[in-house]
Image (tube, rainbow, N blue to C red):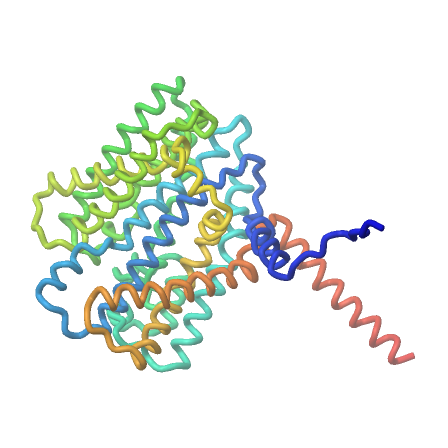
Length: 427
């Protein structure tokens, strides 16, 4: 008699892999738009990885006390983290512009309320956490940004919570230095509706994009002049003016993308070449601008910025029309990490710095390559992991526009149940 086979029994490892593959979908960003493009989060992944690579490597360098002259020269070519910030500014311009350039732009009330409920709770909680740790614990070592100003921590906290630390003190925030870029973001959010209103008044898509590119060029030159001529601690030097070209470039790219529907156009291998050129190019521009002491004249610094802007556009077009580059940037885990970039950005430096301090007690580096590789292998996963936990517990719930109402109802329900229990106990 033939054997009767029952249903296949799932192996434990297969169940685990299936759950692992399903996590990006379960943990993905909560969006109010029906036109989610994972490659945009893929670009966010590139940006946050540039920041993580730079900050982890710099901590490894501080633990390696005796670099050779050759290693000191090599360190100058380490890509600076601000190149990732430039890409973030471009993406912010793109994302903010999208609803305003659609047929039904949001009202000012809806726009600002959405920014407030979506971004403020994670930011406030992260800054309060940094304040609590620094107020109770010992002062950090090997942390130059912490000692740029001797302002009391409570003053630094107050300035950070109002996104005015760089404007007030002329320095990066003491509690969490990378949040200087979020101060620029908020300045852009305040101006964006009015900028986009004026931009949208230009009739004719081609003319509007051409005018936008001219404005990008003007802002780029103006920003470089400000950075080159004014003191780093000056008020104007710490305004949006120095970084505004990236936001405007994102607005123009969004307009062009909506016009040509670039993410639906056929893929071409040529755009993969653009991805490689753009990635290498943007890394090089960061080294030129921040690390290499070349004493370049202003005109070459401006050219470096134009090249960086061009590289950002190459990366964007590769995300839209590349073959393997578009596929890579759209991978579920890549898009998930990119989608959680805000949380990772908020917590990464405290985690990286604390991890490096612990690592320094057990590891002794004998070369700059070893310092970099070990720091990247040990510290970056910890920073991403901490950021993902913060994302799941704090940021992702705030992506739901109705979370304030749901929270209020939950609090009211809790008090109502407590009142009923007390009434029952009295009876």
